[in-house]
Length: 407
Image (cartoon, rainbow, N blue to C red; front, side):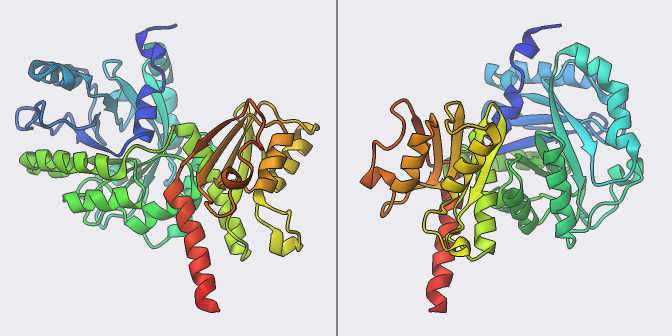
């Protein structure tokens, strides 16, 4: 079955990756559409529809679409994304659905049971499906989600379990991670947790619960959230919606879009994970991954001190691993992601391997290939720079700063 919605598959998901976005969460059982100051000047990036209880949201979604289209054409283009609490809350009227699995709990009904019940209807509708890991974080209050699912949230102090759960989500093939403190939470998900998850996974992060001020929203964005969700606060303070939206427009200029595209960010974060391995071994923190046809075929990080080998750079380690994986010395269908601009030696090895796409994060103005060997890559190779540049650069700067202090 193919329809117009399927033609735009993953459009909403890609948008969530490529911007810092504010999502307005509306519970059909509680929301008063007439009270919300929606207009061409008061426009959230997304509208999430759903709640822990309730049934078919079709009438509500239709009323919402009618209200949006009444004001301005641009309002009717705001994606309406289902945030369902059960299989009963599915409607094909929406643009996309967060296909949630409650990974923080131990109730199989919300890990896979409700998904099975809705699977055929969701599949046949052609709606965009975004597999999402839903992870409850303790917000200091019992939430309706806890009562309905019979599960407990992960304490904010147990950051290792939170990170491990998020890593498991990525390994299971989820496209998004949703860190949820819960409706009416006393405490939002802490920036430290958001930052830690951001550093250890490559998936876009949605963060919600307990966010009551633009400062709370900005703190989540600064820590690494891609989408901030606010619902309960606007139910009691609908007029504050405009202030949040205006502040988020400032964020769009401040943070800018996520670099390049979701795939580049995904693999660069994996390269950053390799760089952190080097850092843990007191090596210069440079990491590299090589990808072919959506599969990682080589990984490496700097090992010059560990191996007492000046050639043991991250790129060399990854190229060697990739050649062993494929059983051949040439890698013409591969893309190489490295956190710092390759040196002339590594650029030569990349060129000899015939790698056709090179993506790097931070420039190296003192030892980079562009200064000494700008033609070292294969003649048909393309180069993309600046992907997650700030994070790659920060890792290097912190390393050398600490080295200087110990001298």
